[in-house]
Length: 36
Image (cartoon, rainbow, N blue to C red; front, side, top):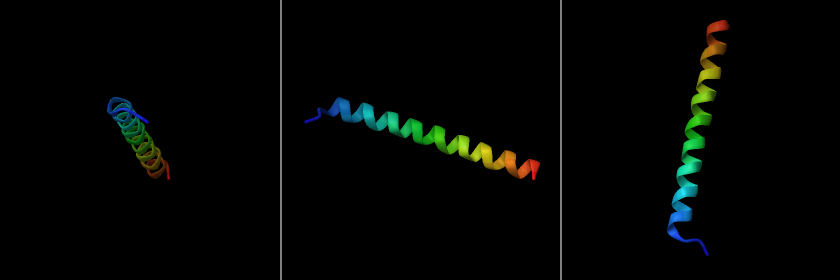
């Protein structure tokens, strides 16, 4: 059983990683579009 702070920390970490992943993916797409 998890307490709320553990779940909150986990959610914030996953959200942050998700944002980083999306921004890096977007960066990759835009750089490909520029070169292509």
